[in-house]
Image (cartoon, rainbow, N blue to C red; front, top):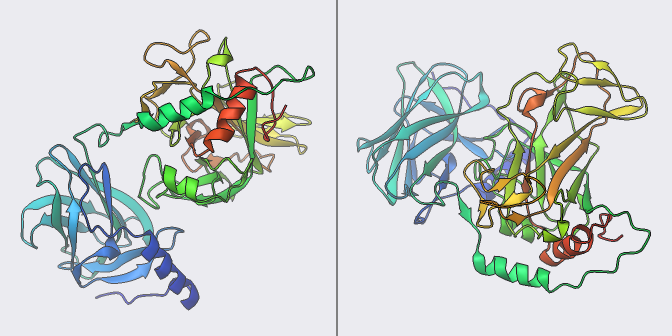
Length: 456
């Protein structure tokens, strides 16, 4: 028996969700020649049978195709399946009961089979999971794709938020994002033409400046790892550019000026997995993003190119972190650490101290790519005080120092990504070129400690 829609929000919130969904949805209307990932929102169908729409319960999720049962279907026009090569198909789905499959076919309801995505209960009609299937042979370019629901169980068995088609075949599709050499050369020329400011005699001779940031917002989004896929990530706490979401690009960050960081000319996006204490989110009281150098000669450092992005740490690292572990969380403030959590993985701080973490990023770049498939292969850590070999370009040594308004307890904490060892951070550069250039020239190149205003 078919479920009847149950309102999830007030009428006002539902209306707002529809407006937001329309803005966020990607209705595929024109093919792209070599799209790395094409995301098709379920509500953007050209035709359907048996489909209703509802607002998803999570922020940024837009609408989902709801109450789907055996025989229901949706048609999507002009879906770009890219060129020849491997194609991976994903669906963000939720199911409270039953199981079944989603058949993806081209041309017609009974046309060539593209993929079969298996669906099992996820824990609720708004408990979302990303399900994937691979395609070894497929038509290329713009195609009409049908999603056909199949189940032997009576009644509805799945809700669908979106489909994603990720292909490989050229460097962009494989995850490499080449730098625009003309723009990078122009940025470098502007930087090299800058005259460094005179350093006062009383200045601390440490190559460093910073951006001082407060917490901005939280979303289960990751525009570097899962671009265009809202809700596909674990929960992240965002700092800096207040517009950051799954659809953020270098252009969108530069176009949206509100930021939670000082200086205001830093429109970059910074994010880390959300911290939980007894299942309640603990948002940081602040983050200082330090830009420094570990080079023997910091004068070799150049600014980040526009649109540069990278990740430090790994969400896949799930190992114990007893006292003394590298990169562990620690207690900052009077009294420091007074003990460890029951599992030994987290510090317990004095009431006058707060939980703190510092995450350090690579500081040598290949000079060719703004990003790489794992978001790390285009960068490396300084070796023997210099950048050389495959990573010859010295970039600022970035680090996140994050402070939380909690002292902790024997119960410990967890991250949205898992254990303490899974801490990781993402950086998406959107600094004003001149502002970043002057800070690198004045503070890092001259080995002079500067404030967030870029002054000595």
